[in-house]
Length: 489
Picture 1 (cartoon, one colour):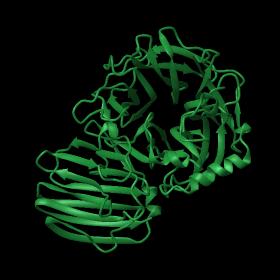
Picture 2 (picture 1 turned 135 degrees about the vertical axis):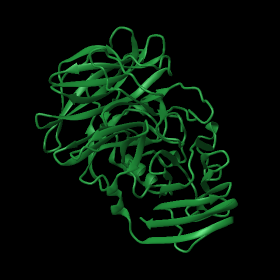
Picture 3 (picture 1 turned 135 degrees about the horizontal axis):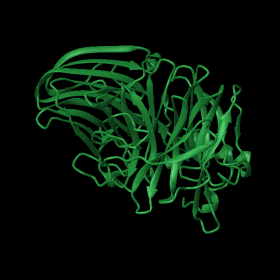
Picture 4 (picture 1 turned 180 degrees about the vertical axis):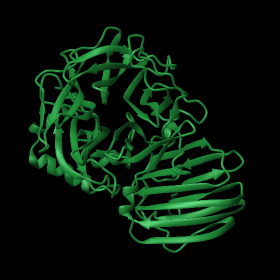
């Protein structure tokens, strides 16, 4: 279906209950609906927004276009949780209904202030010539989850020197001031981030562009996020326009981070190490973090990418969010580990320990389309060791370690219906190790793979048939000791 501009920008108020019911029915018939990931009821989900811990609950919003699997008039959809596992559906959180967000309530963040949750977001507008005019807006949520938008934007214009690609404010508090970084594009079509400060979240002062050691580095930096962890400064962002280089930057757009000294607020300068990709898989973008009452820094990402067609499109919906991940720093790298609360999903467990030599083996209880599995492989005297999952005679997704090349590889060449094949069907990264731990969270149409407790992560959508539910373990050109634990979900 080719979507016209008018169709993409129809507000929900113009949609009949019959049309919505038909759309819901189409979505419900999809064979790839997830079982334990956040996904839209209908339409398209993208960036996680407003991720925050407020009054003893986690709040998480996401970008939502309700009418189909395309980017159109964006709402914020609202969920809350006490445990990061079970989420309550609170419905639409922000509706694009005034002159400052008439063409979409775009991405932003949230922070507690004076007993309320302040949402800082980009209001997207278009003029008669379809020229974009972004505004940075505030909405305030009270204890009863009622959200009220301010009448006027708090940052009404783009500073000189930048284009109208100016969006995605991420707010935090330091000492007695609030700060926000915003993703921007300079007039010379290069990406950067800029900094604002405020004492009350309503009156903002432009303090300038943050100086980094990455210039130029893509044409736009989306969804920036700054935080301090283990006495270091971390910036996460999603640069667009990086050319592929070896195993790096293989997706249409990337998400990654730099770690270094804490952001110098006086000089607007960030001293940092190399840019590192957050995720080595096929489908990961626009992550956002929050900190909870125990001090954990937790990340959620969009399990999808812009400008890519997905098999679920034909059923009127697209994308989901990743599982929440706790962040830590080790040897200059961000580690991502699934939050411990996810263990609540575990049901029956199956455990096997075996030595595999020059063969592929299957075990009783090791099948399924929705599960968690940990596989620890030691005493490796083989060229390759790994796992094939969601398997049948025709289909399989493979993750393995090549001891000769020292690479972890994810291969979705035979995973089922094609997605993003223009960008290849294999993702890999270098890892020097003598043993490997592979933790998989497999859902109906996705996998999240944590390698060696999160030193590397591969996030990907996969679209196999329902009967592709096998799991196989293998070692080639030698042997290795395998220990596997699988929990049904």
